[in-house]
Amino acid sequence: MAAAVAGVLGTLGAALLTQRRADQTKRMELQALASAQREERQYTEQMRRAELAEAARRELIDLRRACYIGFNTAARQYQTAQVNLMHALRSSTDADECREQLEARRLAHRDSYAEAQMILPPGVFSAARDVNQQLNAIYGRLIRLHGQPGTSERELVAFEADIEVSWALLSQLRHAMRHDLGVDQASI
Image 1 (cartoon, rainbow, N blue to C red):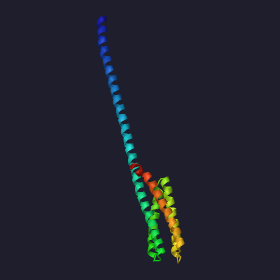
Image 2: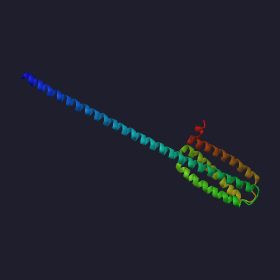
Image 3: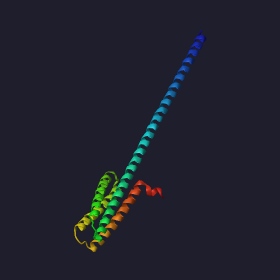
Image 4: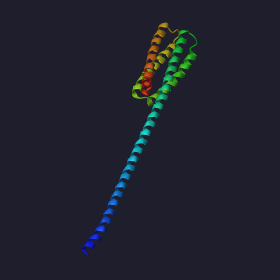
């Protein structure tokens, strides 16, 4: 009888141990699956964040590129209008039309500079500020020359030196813009 009780208990115990081991295995499988799903969600979230960051970076570069193009164009047109007025003063022709064009270019440059103040990074903005100051200083002298009858050749020669300085500053600005956009590195 003891042997029969031990056999029945052994059979029941084995069934219980087997069931318990199966439950532990199933629980471990579920934990592993939950852990894998958690890791997958974390990876997906990291990838989503990386994609959003890359999209924001590309958008910022596009915004800078558009600002750079607009500012460079406005500054060059402002400078060209200054040179045109200088030539009109030199040839003693009617400079009023050139003066009106200069004023329109100055206003366009001012608007472009206002946008640049909000978008450009510090290094590029420093170069843009130098260009803006130089062009506005030239503008002030030109307006004074326009208001004076009989502008001297000496004053116009000095003005040409200022134009050369503004060309150099514009060149430095374009280099800073191209460097910021990575254009110079892409061509290497």
